[in-house]
Every structure is written in C-alpha cells, then in structure tokens.
Amino acid sequence: MDSFEFNKIAGAVLGACLGAMVIGKVSNALVHPAMPEKPHIPVTEEAAATAPTDAAPAKAPPATGTDAEAGKAAFQKRCATCHTFEQGGPNKVGPNLFGIVGNKKAHLEGFSYSSAMTKKEGQWTEEDLNEFLFKPASFVKGTKMAFAGVPNDKERGDIIAFLKTLK
Image (cartoon, rainbow, N blue to C red; front, side, top):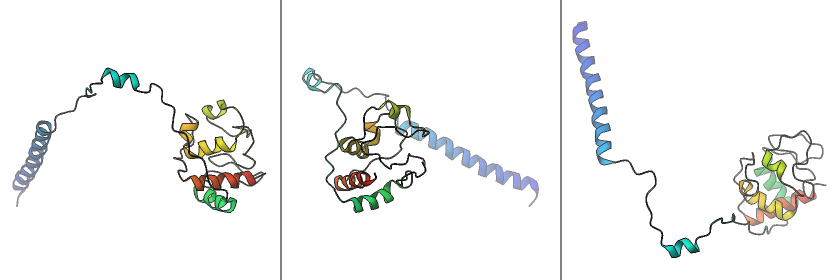
C-alpha cells in the first residue's frame, strides 16, 4: 500500500468521525432544547402571604448520648483527622480541642480561625457544641471547617460528653 492509499483511508476515517460528531450535536439540539433559565411558577396570593420570608435554619435535635468512652471512639473516627485533644497538643487543620467546653469561641492564640468564627461570641456551651456538630456551616456561616456534621443524636452527645472530660 503506497502513501496515497493510506491518506485516502485516513481521510475517510477522519471524515466519518467528523460527520458523526456533527450529526450528534445537531440531533441533541433538536431533541433536547435548552431549558429557560428560571421556569415560571405561578404563586397564588394566599401562598405568598403564608410563605416564610426568612426561615431560620433547622435547629439540631438534642444530643442524647452521655458515654464519654463511646464519644472518644467517635471523636477518633470522625474528628482526629483534623483535631487533636491532648493537653498542649498541636493544632492540625483544625485547632486542638483540649478544654473546649466552657472556653470562649476561637480561643487559641496563633490558630488561623475563619473570620466568621472569630466574630462568634460567647463560650462553647453544650448546646452550642450540639448545634455546631450537627451542621457546622449552619451554626457558623462562613466557617472554614469542611465537615458535614454528625446527624446521629447519640453519637453527637457522646462526643460532647468526651469533650467535657478534657479539662
């Protein structure tokens, strides 16, 4: 086979691929038309009057666990990747959590907290820890902590019971 035959075969293959691609694009445009940016949904006056304007984020259910040993295991499974809990322990991606319960929020000198966390006032109460552990991004809007939360009430309570022992 000489080079002219090879060029004809290569051209036919490339032409077939290009043709298939063009046919696919055209058929997708015909079959799947683009959706409007915002579909119009009619709202009755009654529904608009009863709709909440600024709904508060869902509150965390009460933490039910009280087992500090189970909390330590849950902490090591869920939190130890980013946090330490030993007295004088180093900070990791997150701060050391020794003595967190009852301490002021964003209390560790030298740790780079998010601006949202530094603006949060008060001490870490059990209720605040419960809310934060349930959904960190809801409790501190703008937190750098990329953690979805602990949805299990018992596990969350066990972690809080463990954190209370760190004094």
